[in-house]
Structures are given as C-alpha cells and as structure tokens.
Image 1 (cartoon, rainbow, N blue to C red):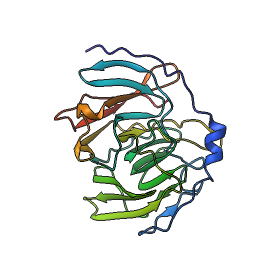
Image 2: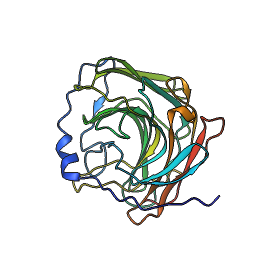
Image 3: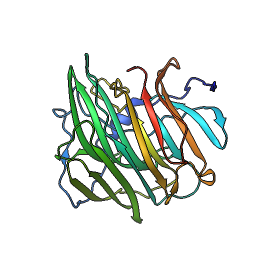
Image 4: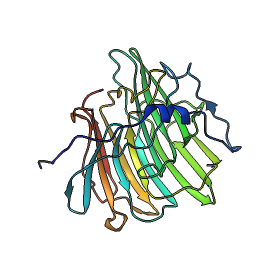
Length: 272
C-alpha cells in the first residue's frame, strides 16, 4: 500500500537538550547500573530524547502514520498511562564504518510531554565492532547502563510501571542470558503520563550535538506490545505508527503494520 509521507518540519533545539543533560535528579534505585560516561559510548554521552514534533502523513484504518527524525514504532496517545510492556529479539548490528547507534525500548511519556520514563537495549557500532548493552533512563536525567551481558539474538521483555506520584518501576529481562534488572526511580517532577511507546530509536547526542547515525540493525521484531494492559493497537488508545526519516524525508527505518494489534517489525533503511 502506498503511504503518504511528509517531511518533519519541527526540529530539536539541541542547545536546550544539551542543557538538560545534567538537569535530572535521580533517586536511589533497587539495582546498581553504571552511569554512562563518555568512555562507554563512542564520541560522547548518548541521550534518549523525546520525539521531535512530527506531522501526520496518513492513516491506515484507525491508526495514524507519522514521521520522526529519531523514533520509529508505535505510540498510544489517548488517555493516562500507568503501564507499558513489550518483548523483542535483540538484533545484530552490521558495523562497516564509523560510530552508529540504535536503541530498542518501552516507555511512558515523551510523545507530547517533556519527560520519558524508559528502559531497553542497544547496539552501538564502534567502527567495525558492535557493542551491546541494556539501560534505563528517566529523561531529562541521563541514561544509566546495566553491567549485564547482552548479545545479538537475546530475547528481551521489559516494562515501565507508574507507582503513584512521580515514582516508576522499570524492569527489563534478558531471557537468553537469564538476568533481570528492576529499578525504582523518582522523576523529580509530575509526569504527564500522556503516552505509551514501543520504539526503535536513533539516540542523541555526542559533543557535536544532533541525532546520531542509526546502526544497521536489519529488522527488529516487537511482540506482546501492551499499554495499560491492552494491545497497543487498541483504537480507543489512539495509536500512532511512526517511521523514521532523515532531514530530507528519506526513510531511515520503516515499521510494519500491527498483527493481532500488538506485534510489529521495524526495518533499517539507512544510517542518516
């Protein structure tokens, strides 16, 4: 089916985003991840940002289609969200040259608000070497890496749950490596809880700023994608399908339609 597409008009104000990198206040947590220093991720601090404003580019059934320069996947946008969860297989990164990045996560907020509470996995290319890890983030606080082993092909499940007030529980399980990390965090401000997402992302930012080149991850498959315990494609939740484009409107990453209202794939097209 031919899908109508339009260029993303709004852009991130990177100076403001970088100013937020040190602005988060993080509460004590149940597990002990590593704070992400510049030495862990090639080129500098990596941040998982809120989605830049995007333009609606069409609809298929009850699902609107949008474009973003750093997100792809599905977001529910109607109601107040308390839980989101999904499973996925960690894709392998094909690293041919340069530093590239790709993250896969579940989260609450960020679609139309200024915070994101999220956890997921990542594959970054350091030149020709692929590096894998898991993380959580309470944006605008910094990403926090877990020390657990992650490999291509690992089977993940993850969830984010609102516990009341500004408190959240973020949980991620690598069923292949047989580990689980559950982290309790306070946001430090009142969460909007206005959206829930299952996303493949090109993160931001190194010292030079800007959205980073997207790792060639082939195809990632998300299954059992739920928000508030319902399939992410439930029409009353007003799901949005998001495809990733570059600044010229060329596809970087395209997602499939939903099967059983909760399963989909996203396929890499280009790095930048």
